[in-house]
Length: 263
View 1: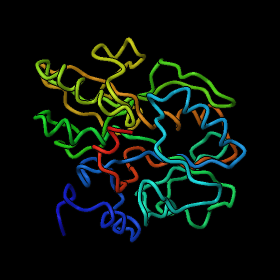
View 2 (view 1 turned 60 degrees about the vertical axis):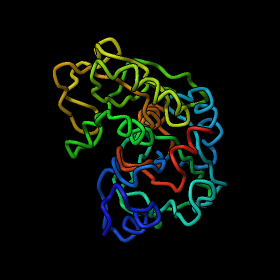
View 3 (view 1 turned 60 degrees about the horizontal axis):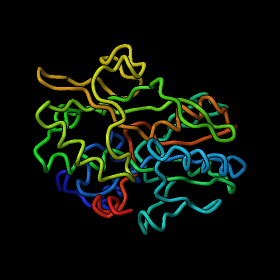
View 4 (view 1 turned 180 degrees about the vertical axis):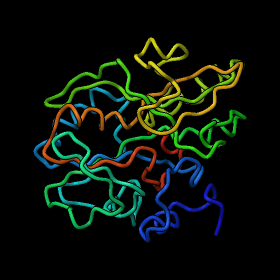
């Protein structure tokens, strides 16, 4: 088998569909865009789409599927959204009910699927510029934190930003900002730099999702908006049911990161 960074998205999705990959997707299929997932009944879909439109930094929408549709058409041609993501969280009235690896048997004909840009997509560009990605180096899931930065509400949806954190050397900080700012469709540039307590993060070594990573001397914690934000928002809105990806377990698309940069 090819290394996971070189595997094609199609071959990777086959592994997922066969139950042979149930791990985070950071570093998988480098060069190809990864995406967050939100699935809601149709009665909530307009409110959520409006929420994303008002909050494009944490919720940059890449693709929306028609009601009941589970095969993607823009992000990939052969992907089944019910089976091709290596971890699904099922929320019932705002509470995490279960985590599954296949949602085919609970699919509903009124489900509307949203695919949202993911910051994993700009990590390839950072690494090509010589900026290491600590959670990839340490074989961990990216650390994610619920902040005190409030999203603009829409309908029933309201709540705070979730952010990802990557330690960046001081002398590479401006380069990291320049690179990631090109990728507005996958969260773009940072929302905060340094001093996590200013955005409500009490303990940087205790992320709300993902794993803690090492911050070395001379490095600054840099925070980007995260597509796990809808999961925080769903816990507030309490829809009857919502299905999301398990944090860090993304949909790997056929779109190149450079294509995403021009959206």
